[in-house]
Structures are given as C-alpha cells and as structure tokens.
Length: 283
Image 1 (spheres, rainbow, N blue to C red):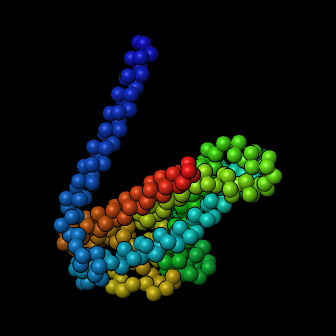
Image 2: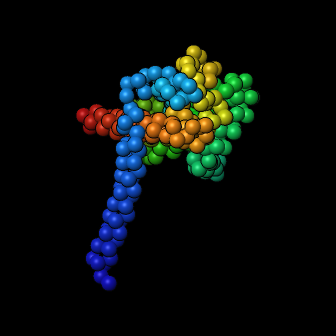
C-alpha cells in the first residue's frame, strides 16, 4: 500500500468521524430545539415561577446562573492567569515545578461532584458562607482554575522567545518585557481558554447542588449569601425529580434550550474576543 493511499484512507476516516460527530450533535440539537422552542416566550424568560414550577418562568434561574458565573470569573481568571505567568516565566525548571504542573493537570480531571463536596467542607461549613451564591461561585471558581491555568500557560508558550530576549536586550525589566511584549501576544489564547472554562462552569450541576442551588425560589437573591436558582440544577429537577414530570417536560426542554443558548453566546464571545485581540496585535 502506497503512502498516498494510506494518506487518503486516513483523511477519509477523519472526515467520517467528524461527520458522525456533527450528525449526532445535530440530532440532539434538533430534538431540544423542536421540543423547546414552543415554550420560549417573553413570559417564560421574565416571570417568576409559580405553583411548584408548573407555571410561570425561569427568570430567577437565569439571574442566579449569571451571578454565579460572575463570581466564578472573578476567582478563576485572575488567579489562573497570574499562576500561569509565574509557572511559565518565573518558576525555575525542576521537580517542584513539574509536580505543580502535574497536580494542575490532575485537578482538571477530577469529577465535578468532588469539587462540590470540597466546596461544602471549605466554604459552606468551614468559612461559614452557608448555602449561597458566594459558596457556589467560589466552588466553581476552584473547579475552573486548572483549566484557566493550563490554557493560559499554553498561550504563553506559543509566544516566541525572541519577544522576551529583544525586550530584555533593550534594558527592560523582566516584568516590563512580559507586560508589554509577551502578554499582548498571549492574551487571545488566555481569554479564549478562560471563557470556555466559564462556559463549562455555567452548565455544571454537581458543584452547586450542595453549595447553594435551590429548585423553587419565587424571588431574586438579594445578597451573595442568599440561596439561588440556576439553570443546570433547575433542568435536572424538572427532568428527573419533579412530582409532575410529564406536565413540566416542555418546560425542561425550554430550560435546556435557554441554557444551550447562553453557553453558545459565551463561546461566541470567546471567538469574537480572540479575533479582535489578534487584529489589534497585528496592527
């Protein structure tokens, strides 16, 4: 078998695998959209739930998801970016640095339910924050942190060494070289990884299950220490635990469609931010 034929077979297999994934994704999206689009209305998006969530809307769940995502971003993005800068630019190569990187990679694979239990022990009980937006946001922030660190460090590694060496040769300090030459080139990748991590956090159920999410709250949270509704947990209850599952099944599809749309918006934001920073850097 010639190399040319092997190459064609390989590309054909890859194309078929990609097409299969797209088909499966299309079937799932079609099922959710076709069954959930009829529920979507201004009332569904802007009203409080009523009668055990058999009537009304999901407005508190949307607001709760937004609040938790903001806290997650405030925790994971700054800490993750600064940790990546230290590991890639300042930390000496050795066993300790390799051990830290290994720990970060392993944390990325830890099941989200473990982070939820850790959040209960540390934030809910240990720090006394109770079941609240703050506890849930901090828990999701810790869960997202390894992803942010890894993505940011990989973005820094793509910046050529000449950017650093040229700046240092002109008399700039190391931090000046990083701030003016390295970070502008790495920011698109760093922000993309961070925002995609937030998109994953916004769809998580297990970490907020124990740390603050409630199924039915016909009011908005008034402080970071209040319980809250969230779209992932709300969808979980509607689909599996509600006392009238068949009655609320259309609401579950509508909630799933709203959650997918929000995650899609976050992903598109990452793409737009990356494109704009790349254009600015080229200029």
